[in-house]
Every structure is written in structure tokens, then in C-alpha cells.
Length: 160
Image 1 (cartoon, helix red, strand yellow):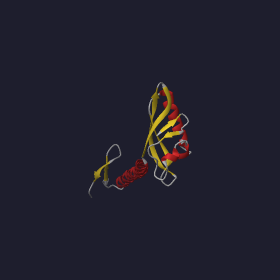
Image 2 (cartoon, rainbow, N blue to C red):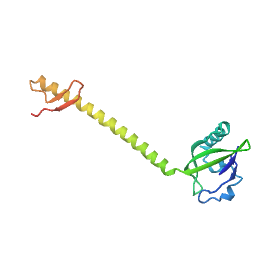
Image 3 (tube, rainbow, N blue to C red):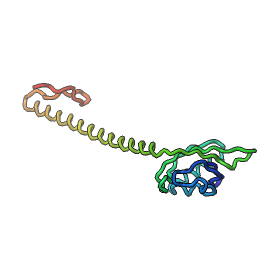
Image 4 (cartoon, rainbow, N blue to C red):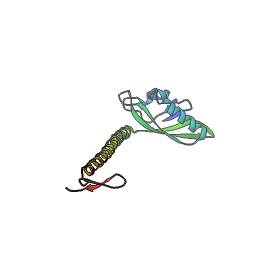
């Protein structure tokens, strides 16, 4: 699509399923973006007009059900015509599946970090208990049951 400085849609070649491309002409991009993310697009438009360089951004926008449930990655390019820079080209693609996968990966990472913390804490507690058992064995004249190196890690169990 092409838009002007204010985000007004000047032309569009394809609309989201359920929306009429012809009917979108003359409307503002903000009508199709989640209010929570409009500032992202506004900053991107301003930067392209200011620098003349392309910008890529991600935004939550309207999907096929008319709800703000679809993620878009949009690249903005300036249109330079006879030294005028009042129009931009926006190329968007649906990245909802990618965003879902990223969210799932982040959740798994948090889960793995929790698991690591639990297992490390458990291992440290096991070393502490085995040292205590070794201390009790020595106190009662028996050989230590566990061999533990100087860093506190168990080398291997000593068979009895």
C-alpha cells in the first residue's frame, strides 16, 4: 500500500481477508492497528520521512475476524518523485505464527531455567547431605561413604 505523511491509505493492492481493499482507500492506518501499537507505526513513519531510509517494524493489527489478533511485519520505503517525499510504500506480511512460536520458545526457556535452578539446588543439597553423612561416619569410626572433591562435587560413590 501507499500512505501519506498522516498515515492515510492512498492505494492498496490487497487487504486482509474480510476487508475491502477499495473501501480502505482514504482511511487511516490507525483504524487497522491495535491502539497499543499505533505509536510504533507513527515513529516508523516519522523516521522514514526524516531520514529517507527504510524502516521495518512489527505491530499487532486487525485480522480476518475484524479483531486485533494478527501480527504484521511491515517495511516502509520512501517514494521519491521529483524531489518530493510525501508518500511511503508499506509492504506487510503476517508473522502471527512466528510470534506464537517465539512466545512458546520464551515460555519453554523460562521453564527450563526453573528446572535448572531446581536441579542445581537439589544437587547442592545432596552434596551437603553426603558431606554430613561422611562427617557422621568419621565421628563413629567408619570410613566415609562418599568421595567428594575439593570443589564439593561428588567424584563417585565408594562401594561398601
